[in-house]
Image 1 (cartoon, one colour):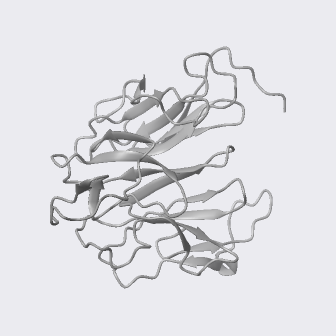
Image 2 (cartoon, rainbow, N blue to C red):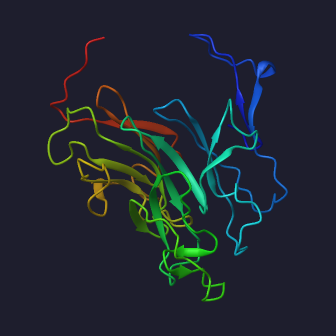
Image 3 (spheres, rainbow, N blue to C red):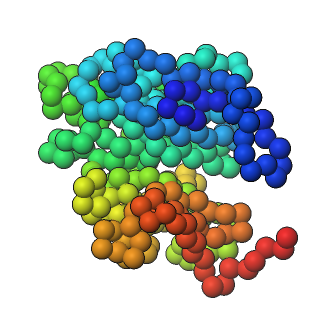
Length: 271
């Protein structure tokens, strides 16, 4: 995925380069609102074979949105509109889509940057057909954007699976599901916090226990590892992914490194 489109490129096992000349467009990000469109996009493959892409937007108070595909997660590929078919909208910056084996897809959503006093929060959202999370019209269910009239209808805003304090900036996230981690971390939810834009405050790696039925975090996330931030040994966590063997990998996009963590009791899988 690039800033203008999603492309399909042939790949041969063992190849170290892609044939750029052979790329074919899968979905277009062409827009008449370039001043609103964010360059960041995330791709995910659903358990049913569907391909999803996210589109973000910059802070604004244009309600209703002049282009609903900005701030949305779309289905793309064969059988879908070139510009994508809507899954969920009303998002500002839905980063790091994850589609899990149990069939649900999720996104880390970053809300309006100036919404502290209005009750704004960052979010983990479970993506369901037709649901809207309100941006830019609404801060949350029942809470209009403070720059809009108090009569703005926010009665249909979907509820997130979990919220985070504004400017903690959740990026990559994943669930432990190897069965090899001990309690209380077994089946836990893990998330990388990129921290506040200027200060890197609250950058780190956090976790929370989950409901075994819904997989949603059952409490606010807390520190799993320490030593992050501008003065830390590791700068800012950008992505978090569990490997099939149970190791937890996370990246530092400022320090240019990838780390892994695992319980000492984790058994190495046979190759």
